[in-house]
Length: 141
Image (cartoon, rainbow, N blue to C red; front, side, top):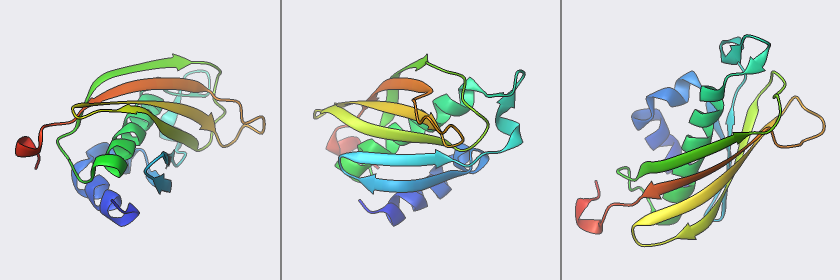
């Protein structure tokens, strides 16, 4: 699957992608990097990026990663998502680096490290693991 194909799916089928200002920085079968372009709307009290923004970005990165491996199977869905918030992210773009841990016939398990582009230390601000269900070929759209 190409970057252009994923962007078309993102634009047409992921309504939150525009709200998060999602951009594709890198898109390969073993590694996907998405970015949520910073907006003041992302901030919660205390001046930190809101958790739902980071979770939405991580979920989108896992979806991109799954599609990079299995093709345009839009009916692949999240069955599990777990996030550990590690540090307070500085206001700025949030970057999601996603890598596949295991890809089976029906399930894909991946991990995402989230970073704040505004933080010079480049220490992760959150770590996410997630599982996607991949429909059988006869149920794919």
